[in-house]
Image (cartoon, rainbow, N blue to C red):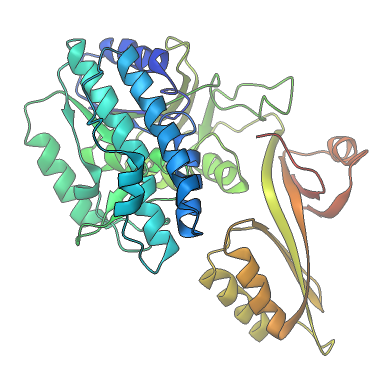
Length: 415
């Protein structure tokens, strides 16, 4: 059994779906295919959700109309023009939507449609091309709690359901949605942005898979984002530990939660280019091999928040506990921490919750913050590299250890 994961860029159009078909057709052993929403569909659904939530239903209808039109075109190009019910309109969807009190709950019930649609298209196209397969419905198989938008997986229940479903079937190929799961009560949940990698890793663990392959639009794991750095270097092999460190530093090549499920069973995780399937790509595995080139990791859309006690007293352990309790409750993702005797600074991802968090922090501390920042982490840095990266940039904060430098920069990086 193998697990393949295809991200949004892999299935962004009809040609991408056909390319997935070609890759899958080369496989002879049992295969589980995990698919993300097509292209930028999740972003489009997010805009629709926000418009509905903020009382702009006409804008929501426009967003959903664009999503519908895009998928109808793809389905038609693949010869699947009868796949969807065209009698249901975007207006019907908006009018019929039940608005819960919780934004995150509403978000998960709507945004999950991206994966449900893409998996339906892929499964139908594989069938049309003679590749027999079964379409799985992950909200009934990958069981989670109700932490909407960041759901925690019930490993035991999910493992039992998934193994029973797949090993109880005579099919050899299965198509599953990434990123989404469900509660026992039947609510849709999501695992966090880019969570399809995590889905693939969990399936591999539950099924004792031979390997996981993440198909991407890059040659493999690179030492920098090729959209930002010209002369990138392929890292052919790295350990689970180094992969975790890179992922949690913000490397976009793989979701941070994806490593533990495969590491626990020593399952190799490959990252390969979908436009060159015969390439060896990169592999994350049990190895002593060290990454021997500097690695540059950009984390965009950051805020730097600095807190100082209002009475100029020391920042004591009690204050730290209070600050991080607020950060946790508002679900902020901390990417850097730096403290002194009287201040503590945190760099966090900008989310819809950050304004409320800053307001609550301001009740107890003097708070200042800067937004529209980027965080550059350099693993394997040298004094020469650090000097070069600092030159000509507005640096808000620098943090260095033996081999790692982190720079908070007043600079927005490209999408």
